[in-house]
Image (cartoon, rainbow, N blue to C red; front, side, top):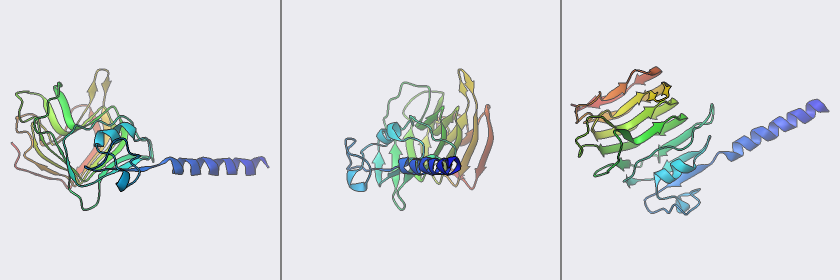
Length: 217
């Protein structure tokens, strides 16, 4: 009986884990007061999703240009990634034109001290070009994080790297298991800082493949 009870308990735990994973939606005509659980009840901002998602959740972002910075609040876990993805066939753009952020090292999509996150099919553009800051203003930045995927995304017109991974410096925390697959990096490093795709000191166990890099300074 104890063995049977253990099996039923394990099945209940596994089922509960599956139920807890939720798909959310973000749309330009959404509202952050909505439930976010369908296209008709979508949230308005990606950052609201970034504040809400927990391990196993994903957010599907519908067509449009979103003028905001995105900083994930929570991490995923092994086998339960948090996923940010553009709806298939939709052009999803995060635009930083004219954005003022009081930080010398940042990005439009900034993954800091997090783990098990995937970003898919999103374009980030126009970040940092209006400022005389000789520092990192990137499209995507991965700092002190691990098991991060940036896949089939695009960057355009960034002050420093289109995509960069680096350590978090105080306390020193390296980035590792970083996967940069199938992205397009255009007009990166218009401020002359870093490289178009950068894996800096303090980053290890990474793979970069099938990316297209062009028109960079």
